[in-house]
Image 1 (cartoon, rainbow, N blue to C red):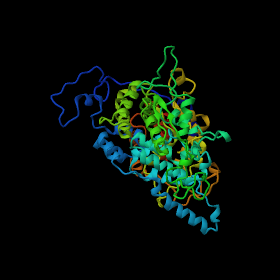
Image 2 (tube, rainbow, N blue to C red):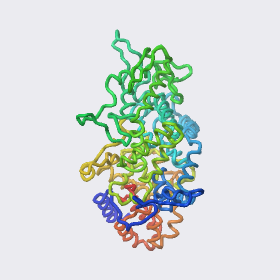
Image 3 (tube, one colour):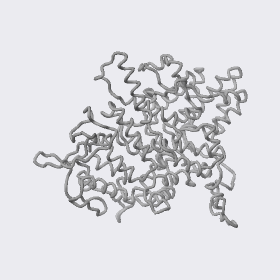
Image 4 (spheres, rainbow, N blue to C red):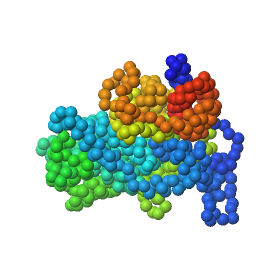
Length: 599
C-alpha cells in the first residue's frame, strides 16, 4: 500500500483509539428506551410477550443486530450466517447451536499427526527425535476454528480457556497432544453442568501438570513432604470463588468495619491440598510417579487415583463442610468439587468473567445478578447449567438492547485473536488444500496472544485490569488493554497489512523463518489462504455500498461518521483498481477503533 496512506492511517489509529464512544439517538421504542413503560396486551399466545417486544428480547433481529450478536457469540460470522440469524431469530439459533455435537480438535489431530510423522520419517528423521510440539495443537486449533459449524461452542470454549488456564509456556510446549486433549475437554464440557466442567478440569493431566497436583503425594513429615498447595489455591482464587465474598450481583461484601471478607484462608488451602493427592498417570498400566516425558504417559485420559499416595482422613473445606474420613479417595475429589460448585460466589464470579469475555468489560451489577440467578437455577431447579448461563449472557437486555450503545461505558476491546478469526470467517477464508496449519508465530509474537499460550495461570490479562487514563479515572475495567500497547498495536497494523495486501493470511508454510517483513513468505499456492471477496468486488465501483456492506459484517452497523469519512476519502482514488480498493477498505476497517471495540 502507499507508504503515505499507511503512515497516515497508523497515526490515526494510534491517536484515536480504541476508545468507547456513544452514539446519540432520538428517543425511540423497541429494542431501546422502554424503561418506565407499561405494556398491556390482550394475550401473548403464539407471539412474543409485549414487554419482550419493547425490550427487544422477543423481536426478530435485523441484520445489524444479528451481526452484533454473532460478534459476541462466535469466532466470526459471514454475511450468510448474519442473514440466517436475522431470519430465524436469536433464540432459535441458540437452540440449534446447543443441540449440535461438539467439533473436537481430536477429530482431526490424529490424522494430521500421522501425516506429519510420516513426512518426517520419509525425510530421514530419527523416530526418537520426533515430538508432538505445541505448534501441532495450533494446527488442529486453526483447522477446527475455520471449519467447525458449532460456532457458539467454539467461542465459549475459547472463553473458558482464558479462565481455566493451562499454557504452552511451560513444559507442555513439548506436548501438543496435552494441549489438544485439554482444549477438547473444554469443548465437550462447555454446555454441561459447571460441576462436571470443574471436575473434568481438575482431573485433566494437563491441568495436573500445569498446577502441580499430578504426582502430588500425601504428607510424610519424617521426610518433610507435604501436599502441594498450588491447585488447591488457584481452584478457589481463579476457577470458582475468588478472593472475597460476593453479593449475587458480583459486588464484594464487607464486614462491620467496611473490610472485604476473605472467602478462604491458608487453612482451607491446606485442607483442599490434601484432597488433591494421589492423582497420577491415567494410562492403564501407568504408575504414580510417571512423568509427562515417560513414553507411557497418556494425556488423552483423565488422571487416575493411586490410593496409596492419597492423604486419608477427614478434610474441613468451605462453609463448614467436612469430607468424612474412611471414604474412597476419588469420592474426596468429587466432594471437594461439589463443595466449590455450591459456594454462593460461583454464579457471580464465573458469570461476570464470561460476560467480560463475550459481551462487555463493565457489566452492571444488575446484569451480573441476572446471569448469577441463571447459574443458581436454570428454571428447572438445576444449579450450574452452562447452557442457561450462556443463554442468559447473550440474551440479556444489556447485551441486546440498542439503547446500551448510547452508554460510553458499554462494550469491550476485542482481543487480538477474535479480531483475527472474525476477519477470516467473515469472508470465508479458504485454500485449495483445505488445510489450515497456521503456526501463528508472528501473530503470537506481535499481539502477545494465542489460545493456550498465556504467560501464566492469570491469563493474558486480569479481569479487573484498568489502563491508566480515562478508564482508570472512571473506575472502569479494560482487561484486554493489558496486552494492548504501542508495540502490539503497531504489530496488529503490520499483520493486517500482510493479510490484506500480501495475501498472507496464515503462516502455513514449511519455513520457520522470522524474516517476515523482509519479503513475501514462500507459501505454496495450494496452501495460500485467501478471502472470498467476490461480492465486495462486484459492488466496489460504489464506494458507499462497499462501506455499507463492510459496516454490517465487521462493525455491525456501528461505524462512526468520522471513520466512514476517512475510509471513503482513502478509497476514492482507486476507481481503476477495484481489487486494491477492496483490500484497502478491509485494511482500514480492521485497524479502525470501530472494529477494535465491540459495542
